[in-house]
Image 1 (tube, rainbow, N blue to C red):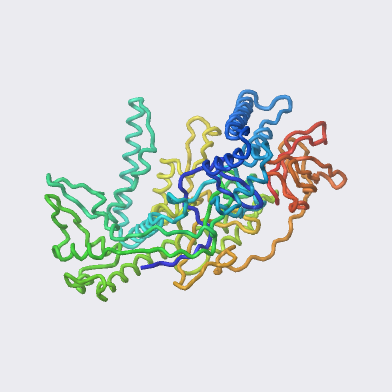
Image 2: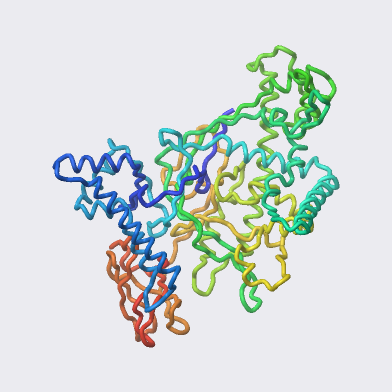
Amino acid sequence: MQLYLRTLTPLHVGDGSQLHSFDYVLHGGQFYRVSQQQFERFLKQVDSGDPQMKNSLAFADWAHDMASKIESVETDRRNAGRQGGRDYNQELSRLRGEYNLLAFAKTIKQENRFLEFIKDKKNKVRSLPLLMEGGRPKQEIRGFQRDADGRAYLPGSSVKGCIRTALLYHYLTEHADYQSIHEQLIKEVKKIKADKEDAERRRIRFSVEKYRKSFGEVIEHEAFFAGMITERNKARPGEAQDDLLRCLLVADTALPEDGIGVENIDLYLVKKLPKGQGTQAQRQPQSPAVEALMPGQVLAVNLEFNLSLLLRLHYAGRGDDGVMIGRERHFIGWRKRAKWLFNLDATDFDTVPPGTRPSDTRYEALVDKAFSHILGCVKQFSDAQAAAYDNWQKNYTRPDHKGGNDARKVEIGARSVAATGLRFHLGFATGFEGMTEVLYLLAEHKRLFADIMELFGIGDSPTAWKTRRPGEAYRANPDQFPKSRRLISRSNMTLPLGWLIQVDADATALSNPVVAEEVAPPPPLVPATPTYLRGTLKIGAELNAELISGGNPGRFKLFIRPDFEPTVEVKYFAGFKTEDVGRIALLRVKNVKGKEEVTVVEFMRFK
């Protein structure tokens, strides 16, 4: 069957790459992905006009010199910290901003020629729009999954993984024995704790991480894997050839290149507020920028169902003790799993006599029944995920006194997830709720899940150990799990990632893909207004400022007091656009001379 899916929110499926500043050029609101071979071809074109020019060699020397300067400042920062008013972070920001291909082209006075080169379609430099607020991506950019020819595609394994988790959720909520699951989880927790105690007695290193991947595998095997017995009469569970989900095949899907852009992602981390004011999801800057498929794009995903395998098993024997393959017995207990996973039983299989072709209506009817059940399970699971996100958004997102967390923008973006219909949630930032059975554990085994969280440090801050007293341990709170979410940051909304919805075969991509048509248009945003400094003017204070001239450095007016609005120059790796003049920004004070003279500030973001 062909499943048509429209992206409700940006989708990123990464290829594992982290792009260096030499891998791309930012210009005019566009992201140009420049390969090493393309840049070398440009330098050869420049050199070809004059045999005396050796820009390829000059580039190597320039890159080595810049890298050495950056390394030197990083070493000085590690060794000396802040001394004599020197701002190492500002120096590093400046150097890294100057460490890119366009900056080198400027040094050899070939900036315009290089821009013409990357914009010329015959050079095949991929161009993507910058969709984030301010048009400036973070320094770390992650690429989308692409084939050998550089074409973006959605891996079939990503879609199948989403379906697999949904079917496991259906099995646990509808078919599994509660007590059996509970006892199995307790058994695994006890085993890990016993191994840890044994390691401590023997004074050898113990790492709980090696247990993370295999934890709960027995439960997954029970849901998907039929049994196997070797020729020596030994049971071997979890063999890939006995996985019933091998009946489901999902093809890779090509993506429209003009539907991909570059987005910034922020980490929203739930933290306790002081003085008993509750908890709040606070925006953190750690997450990367990504190449992402934009909302409103329609994908045709091809799915096939191998009913022939199940029919062969059915007619090989009426029982459920499997079949002999050579000297081994495989597919023991396949019938009950076929019922769990595909809602097919012996009565269904009897309607398709041996030798029936796949084009026969009886064969097609069973395939349709299997797909109907599979997609119903996906809907059940995605509905649960959407409800969990809605609960998180309503309970933990609200503005802080500095205006750093715009709950209204998060609420606007949440409308995309609230769309009705068959939805899929996949790709980067799917999180625990999309990749594991945490929703089932929270609903049915919450106290035991708290033990699991503590055992693996799930939900614990990586730096919490610094403030803990001797003997004090992490105490998990499942009611506030998950504490963090990665969300796309745009100027008018904050969107979750990776949500798609089923549409009709004749659906087309939206001509102006901001959010899918199922989402109500957001109300107009009120332009940001400045606020004056609250508290003391000191290092670390955050100031509202108005950009009064672009360039690099840009010039800002600081709102310290109504009678005191000094101006400062600010350098930023991407510079400041003239069209942003008049916008209100948030700056952080890095150095103060005397009581009121601000000498160094750092650009954080536009409001």
